[in-house]
Image (spheres, rainbow, N blue to C red):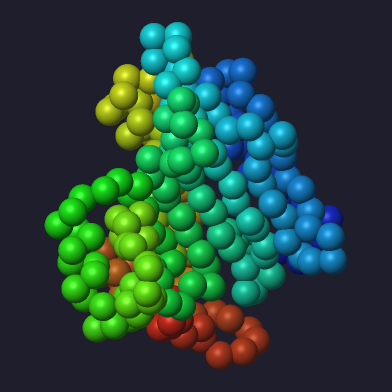
Length: 247
């Protein structure tokens, strides 16, 4: 039975998600501040973040090397049945410069001028800056670069990351950091993150099927399954073209 999309149910669903996030990051740092689900006054929204929002210290050789800050803004989906992420971010900084991220993974469900899931790199490269200046107003997001005194940087670029359904999950970020920088971690961390990644992709696959049930039906029939519409009320669900076309 689908939950009633009331504040209490949303709070519980978000609290369960917060607990899952805490378990995920504790494979890298068992002493990190837990995640909590915090309601937004006057809105059917819940913020899932650490409280206090100190970030997750990631260690290499016992030394604090990286700071990872994670936040999710959640609500129920358009059907009022499943917890959905309205926006999220994973910010990766060097521990010695916490206010200046090295790179950022971000998601904005209602984005219309930038990719919904995107990646920012905080760096400087003369050739990239040159291209951004020369493009001027020729690009959709480049008009502000023509403003007097504006100096574009690489962090202004939004690199797309798979849209609403196929964006990276927290386990991807933690695995990448562990692979590239040799994070201290529990011996079972990679296996647990693999399991978490599988759970994430199954959830996202379920959401993708709801976006385009007809393609799912054709694929299942091609595998030999018998699939028939048995809904008693309303028309057979159609394809959400906006979700499929969204960057």
